[in-house]
Image (cartoon, rainbow, N blue to C red; front, top):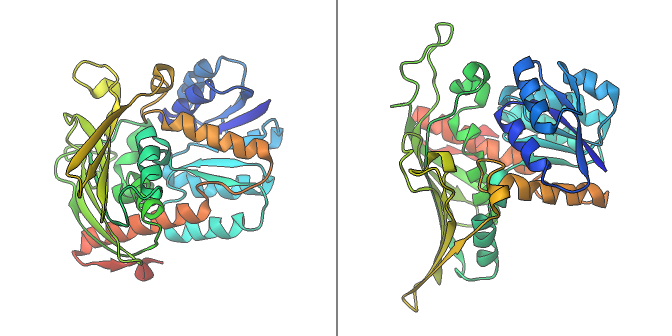
Length: 364
C-alpha cells in the first residue's frame, strides 16, 4: 500500500483525491490545509479516514506518508518544496513548479542532491489525445515537425479561496500559471529548447470590475505568443479566456513536411451546452495524399468524471505510481522541465508588457 500525503486541498487537490481513489493499492493517509472548510471537503472525498493537519509541517513530522502531493497556491510551492525535499520522499508538485525563475533554479539545485524523484504535474502531457499526437509525431507520421500551434479558447479562471489566482504576483502571471503546460508540450514534441519569445497580450474582459482589498486583478486574459526553438522549429499559442462557448477547448496542431496532426480536446462537461462529456478527436491530414483521417478518442466515464482535465490527472498518477513502485528511475516531467516551462512563461509575460521579443538568455 502506497500512502499519499496531500498538501493543499483546494479545487485541484480535490481533483487529485478523486483520481487517487481510482487507483489500486494506494491510500491517502494525511491531508494538510490551513483552511478548515477545504480540509473538511477533502476529507469527505477521501472517505474520512485520513489524518488532518492545519500545517503541513506537522504532517511531515508525523511521518505517516510514503509520497507527498503539493497542490498549494502557486506562490507557496517554493517554500513547501524547500520543506519537503529533505525528507527524501517522492514528490508530485502541481504546476508551475515555482512562480519565479530564481526559485525554480534553487529547486533544481536541491533536487540534484537527493535520490527520490520530484515530478512536476504537467497534466496536459497525459491527455489521451495528446498522448496519441505525441506518439504519431514520434512515429514520423508528420515527417519533420516544423510548426506547433496551440489554440486554447476557454472559460475564465475559476473562483478559488481568496481568489489568489487573480494576481500575477501570486500566480507568476497567466502565461506562467496557465500556459506552462503548453511550453512544456512544445519542448517535448519539437525536441528542442526555446531561444526566443514574442507575446502580445492584455487583460481586456475578465475580472476588470473586481477589487480585492482595494487591489485590481492584473492577469492576462488573451494573448498571442510565438516561440522560436534552437532547431529552427516554431511554436505559437492563441489564448482566449473569455470564450467558454467554444466546442473544442484546445486544438493542438503539429505540422511537418508530410502531414499535420491535430489533437482536439473538449472542455469540462459542465461547460458544454447540454452538460454531457464529449469525446476528444485526433485528425491526421496527409499533404501528399490529400486525405484526412479522423478518429474520436473515448475515455472511461469514471475517469472523465474524476476531474476537469479529460482523464489526464488519472493517467499521470498511473505513471507517477509506477515510478514510485519501481523505487528508482527518473520522472517523466522533472525539475528541469518545470524550470523551462516557467522560463518561457516569464519571457512571454515580459514580452507582452514591453512589446519586444525576449530571448531566453535574458530571463535565465
